[in-house]
Image 1 (cartoon, rainbow over the protein chains, first blue to last red):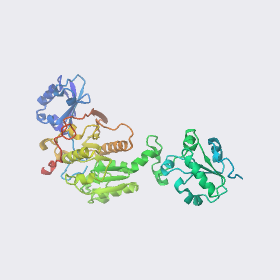
Image 2 (image 1 turned 30 degrees about the vertical axis):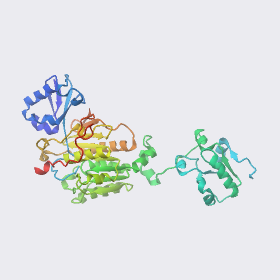
Image 3 (image 1 turned 90 degrees about the vertical axis):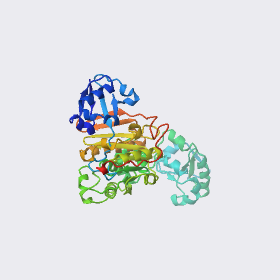
Image 4 (image 1 turned 180 degrees about the horizontal axis):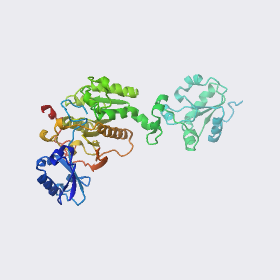
Length: 94
Length: 377
């Protein structure tokens, strides 16, 4: 059981939750558990970086990186915003 | 009264005693040596121009003179000149200034800051890690800000206040009422004005030491090399869109300029430093932009007004560290800030050997103009 931090851009998919508890022994298990409960996440997570214990899973064992109970898992998609993303046809507005 | 028959040398100890009296100390070293420190109240005339200038600086030929250089050789030559010109009470410090300094006799380092600069930057000058050398470095530095909006406003204000000598600002937008909730470089009086002009007036009003170069244009593959060619020590990326982020990243890698990155969304922000050759670049983190359908809808955005104040100030902090070489910059570390929980979290960023731009076998070797996601919505 681990805490997964949901980035603001994906919170509409988790009912607004900022953190959710997920089950699994590897990152893959955790993400599968998440997508089973929040199906609209499917297809959106592949563009997010995943950090376990502050380390990018790409520098560990990728989706097979083990997750221990109590680990915090951070999902981090690219964010572009410099000021607000309200109407950004002009750029850069920062 | 002393005459030319008197011993022409003085020891360090004698010189120190003379310093307390009426004797004039004459430094005949070069400007660069003088700038690193000299005897208090000394007069500086480099040996090469001594004969021409000494009469202007020293009209009283009866005055006792102690001439010195680094090791006592140039001062011996100067002594001959002085005596030939009638300064009969001149002697030289045969041990030289270096021994003087090593022995702990008083030395002053001349300030290259103007008196009003010494007052303006006094709280920097008091910090040993910065001091006058650090302040001079800031004054000689050039920083390019991408965007004069939420992040660029606080970042540029603090950099201008700190005395960064040249600030460039790239932005093609005009000041809109909806900006003023967070974009503190602008004001109600400037609605409708180009942001670069509004920001320039604010920044030079804050600190007239700062030269602001404005680029009232949209950053693109067409103009980025021209703008970067003006020579920048650091780029502060406060853009609000992916095409600009990737352009800035690729250009910074190819031009070898560090980027202080910041981004914000609602209550959360991030900051890091991309230092080409030393740490990862933006594409190590996110090799390509997400597809438009996964980018957050532009209409769903919004940001707490103070959030860019936090992240933009962190960017100014990192920039000052890079310029002055102090501290541990956020290279290889991404700092995440959550305004609601008031927590900072750090994750490690590593260089990706397969990075399409800074990796071992780059696949992106020219600028990519990604489509502007929001324009189509």
